[in-house]
Image 1 (cartoon, rainbow, N blue to C red):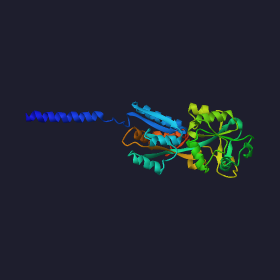
Image 2: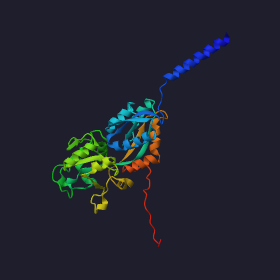
Image 3: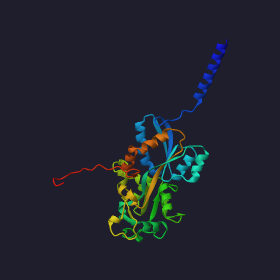
Image 4: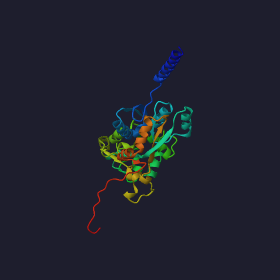
Length: 316
């Protein structure tokens, strides 16, 4: 009898444990599961390439990706509606405290260096500008194209951004100390691609986009968007002496911050376990992630040498 009582006690305990385990939420792993990622809209091509490569490597992985203005993306992360955020700034101490109060994980990884490209229609005819001139455009001292040195246009300058809370506009505001842009002739196109569409249609428009949208020379989308588009060379010098004093926002210009409008890219994670978010971040931190970032025309944390053909002569 005692044996049967003990057996039933053990059986009841086993059933209870099994029942508890069956109600436990199944967590994702680095190679299996589905999570939501949020990203600033200007980083869309880069995020797509990185996540698609990971999904191809692990077929049981799926990412739901929301693209929106940067401040909204960070808010979505803080509200626990996304596991990871791809943005162009680290979160503030106040935002870190909010995550800590929620007892969530918090990890920031630097991806590499990006740039804000200044673009116009090829019909505009201009291709060079100094930082001082750009600053004067934003402080209202320069309002027409004819005020720019060497400009072939004479009408009013209209500034075109993707969204009011986007990383592109936030970067420019911080760069030039702008508190209020309501006095500027400025429009929001809705996305980086639409910025390019608007600029191509009007030679008096001056557009601002993330360079990863147009930096991949092997991307059909980037090649198509670049048709009919001029990417400005920007000089830090007040009085540039030659074309060599101007730099575009591609790898040679991003390296050593020669291009004046550079910014950093980060992944912010709130993951509290060894899950899919951490798996993606580890994947990106390794060589394959850096090579994808470099292919997009950006500067990864660690630069990878390009293959070059070396020839020698009989005198060497």
